[in-house]
Image 1 (cartoon, rainbow, N blue to C red):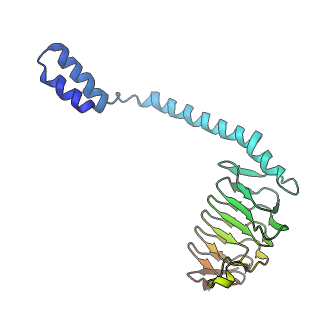
Image 2 (cartoon, rainbow, N blue to C red; image 1 turned 90 degrees about the vertical axis):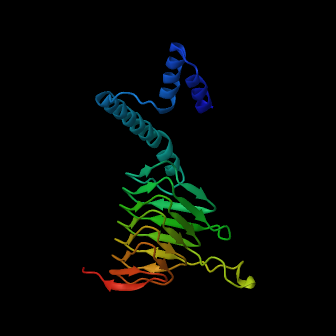
Length: 227
């Protein structure tokens, strides 16, 4: 529409039409002069308003809501980007000084009314991480879980029709000082030993020893780490 208007005005040979043509051209292609200092101040105000708003939402809304869903008060609890999704029957315990991204989800399996999720002290859980609890998922202290990680405390559905309604549910344990890198998938209840690093994109289908670099699809020990 603007292009049609611009062409029609351009055809007119008058001072007014030339002025209108410049106005329409500026409306489509124009930019303001380089007011760098001014817009640095505008950007600073924009950032301050955003930080203040999100801090107030965390302080007065998101963190208290999450605390209300826990079995005990978590000291120093921090949230990034809102409130995690909690679905299904699951009791949640979080240790001190943990930080969770609000763009994560926690699900309790509907076939078990006593699902438990235990998160230790000084843990970090990144964005778009999903934790599904079959019976119990235990995450130790100082565990780092990067974004887009999927942790499944049950085996999911079997390939054959007879097995699809009967997933194997058991405890899933991640010990202290473990680092799960981006986009890991723990697809069944396993035990991950202390100090191990699960490489990005790894598919974990079996137990992981202590202090190893574990990666691949399916995951395997790549090497032992210095302790």
